[in-house]
Length: 76
Image (cartoon, rainbow, N blue to C red; front, side):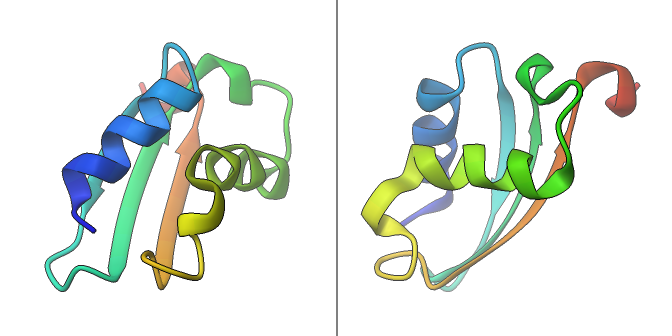
């Protein structure tokens, strides 16, 4: 697994989202996801939205994903 593939999956699964993903070992990654759809949602709900875009890869090909999830207003 690579960071670019994860970025593409997140951005495809969350239309309008902008994701930055880093990770050099192929199993541990960090992502910052900016998405208007996060507005009014608690952090756990935001994380679940991102995890849903990755499906079965979580816990498999992606061993760990550290997330920062913000709205565009929060990112500014």
